[in-house]
Length: 267
View 1 (cartoon, rainbow, N blue to C red):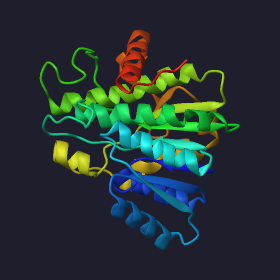
View 2 (cartoon, one colour):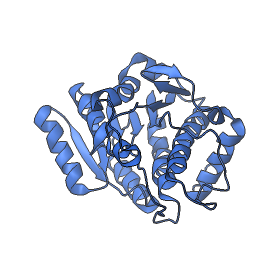
View 3 (cartoon, rainbow, N blue to C red):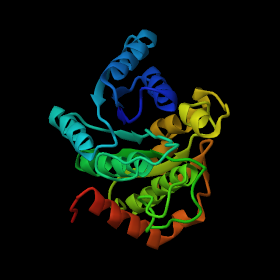
View 4 (cartoon, rainbow, N blue to C red):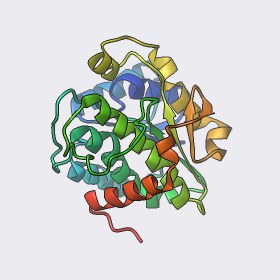
């Protein structure tokens, strides 16, 4: 299968890319930095000499760079069987994206929303395909649509939890939008894993990168991942997401706002 992975130059994304290469899949890996993306490609090939990998660069805090990356991929004329929206950040202090949005929300949710919809016509062209959103068990219990841009003040932990709730809301809404297509859409929690985000935000260690990649690899390659849709997974099992993720009004409103923010006009 052809698999596109965002945030594949570090942590869980890098491990996911390695394990998918070991299974013989063709990889399209994204990173923010050209050298690190190239280094990651070379690192994977050093372990899997037969690996087929192409690299893509984009700063996910810039919607124009996301669009440029999507256009570059579409120009290649390649297919996508699996899109893994993996990239994520934890911002200790309030900062804004190139488009004026709070960075955690912009990178963790909006960039992936935008990228997915830009690539969707290509994904739909496949007889079957999979979209996988890497969320977290650290999901907000509510969503304040008047504070998506830190209008009421900034708390790093709430911003992160909000963005992860948005990942799941997007998953559930996109499932409904694609109900007539043979595309599965699922979200997952990778677990408490030793990554830069965990160290920066919580100052603790966690599980191995292998265990962190396990559910992404499972959903990308298993029979269940190709048949089950509209679910949230933990430890390769369907699990209950935050209650707020199941509220239809939240799903609809986030979808509408995200379309407006990314200036997408979909019919």
